[in-house]
Image (cartoon, rainbow, N blue to C red; front, side, top):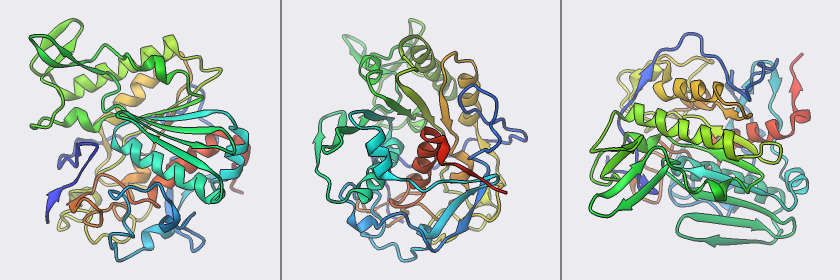
Length: 363
């Protein structure tokens, strides 16, 4: 069905690393679990959705612009995430811009961070469609400034969060214990981090030749182990260098891929193509991916507050929300998400966590 789509060079990997997890504890910000768990719930049909007309959003890249590239069934836009014990507030872009006047919001990670970043921009733009903005694109960053408010929204492309450096007589080295760009990141007011996909990458487009861990350079190592080391490097940096009284830190959890229908109870289905409805209910047959546990374990050990955007389960249920063949790269994609669509919910949860008074508890 065509080539595999690549975004920021990220391949839609046809591999599933799943581990059954019967009693997954939700990590929020190293505090006790609140009465409303925003990540436990189900998708319900809501005619008041979508939150915006994506054809009017100037920030959507061709990789995610499913409507423009002919996605025939648009019901995927009509589903609202409903937590079990409260109502998730609608994203109020004007309120956000007013309250974050003069501040910087930074998304740091791979192409799923790009997915999230563009959703966030659309949610702001729809609230102030006539507001002036400027966009600056550099090698590693995209910065959009809403000039009337002085709000900067930044995407910093970093597939691993840790560094890749070219060493003389060696080559490109993935340095699992080094994170030189932290000096830039820590100046933002909100940080949303993401990594995982590229740790699985091992083909010719892998951007490193060797991996270094604790001073030892090797040709390769177990990728899940490498992910854990790299994530611990990030966690130590947050605990040491980030002033969390000034800067709110988020980690964007692992988003589900849909390349095997057996994972959602339909073994005859090959992938997300032609899927038009979410998985019913609030459980996913195949359980949670291995990195989900690793992320939670690392966050639990941190001394600084970090909020986990624990989007794994809510994305597992949305086999219908991917571009599949309906993207401008003419590839096949059950890894990333249409915009508008599922990533808008990630940013609604971000909004609710920044403004907890907006949450309404169910009766």
